[in-house]
Structure formats: C-alpha cells, structure tokens
Image (cartoon, rainbow, N blue to C red; front, side, top):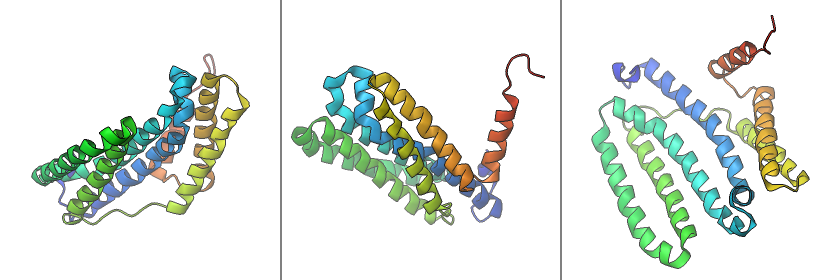
Length: 213
C-alpha cells in the first residue's frame, strides 16, 4: 500500500525497496544453507531408503530462495501497475519450464523436474529484474562478503549433526545450532541493519520467564 502511493523516482520508494531486498536476502540465506542438508532431512522425515531424494529437496529449497527474492521486485512492479509485463515474464518462464521438462523428466525423473524448477526460478528472477530496472534503479547488495561469512557460520554450525546417531535429533540440532551461529555472525559482523535488529532485540527483551518482574 505504501509503495503504490509513491512514484518509482521517489527516494522513499527506492529506500523501501532497498530495505525489502536487504531483508529478503538475509532471510533466504538460511534456506540456501540448510538446502545442503537435503539428504539428512529426507532420512529424518522418511527413513534412510529415501536419502536419494536429498538432491531433489536441495534443489527445491534453492528454487524457493530465488522465488523469495524475485517476489520483492515482482510485488514492487505490481504496485506500479506493471502486472502486464510480469504476465509476459510468467508466460515465458512457463513455456520454458514445459519444454525443458519434456526432456528432463524422461531422462532424469524427479531430479530433472527439480533442476528445471531451479532453472525456471532463476530465469524468472533475471527477467523480473530486467523489467524492474526499466522502471526504477536496482537496489544494492548489502555487505555481500559479510553475508557469505554469516552463511559459512551457519553451514559450520550445522556440522553438529554428525555428533548424533538419531536422524531426527541430528537435523534438529543442525537447525538450532546453525540458526544460532548465523544470527551471532550477523550481529558480530554488523550485517543486520538497524530496522531489522531493533525489532528483534525488542522482541527478545519482551520474552521473560513467567513470574519475572
């Protein structure tokens, strides 16, 4: 609603898109990091005989990450009445997805379909960004090297899963420790912008044990 009341050349519009893009990049990094746990997640969910489906889960999670970033630009374009151009993007991606799947699924099965999904989401992101660039300036990547270091901390923390024999406990520990190390790294590297860190700190302070003053 706020964006729809602003023009693309308004500094406030660009500021809000920058914040949305930065926030989304920070939020999707754990999805990318935990996508590496596809095999372990399948074992925890369905048993060891389904470990082979781990690659499919990994690819699906990666496609979700691309889709989330694309949504920032797609929603911004809708607020500016550019939905017709987005329809052209969606139609192009749909045609490509169908054509590639005609070959990928018979050859590779579920893995082929998952690869096609990733390809489709990447293409959708690229085309949407190209359309957005013709409407407004693109936002900048926020501290990309530090964000990658925080992602590395998440992946390192997820290695704790090797300390557990039970698959469910292993994946639960990986998620818990991985997220904790990611958040700590974001804080230590000063990656979290104030408009994200302040609400988080406020929420954390509001959580008190029952009976605490």
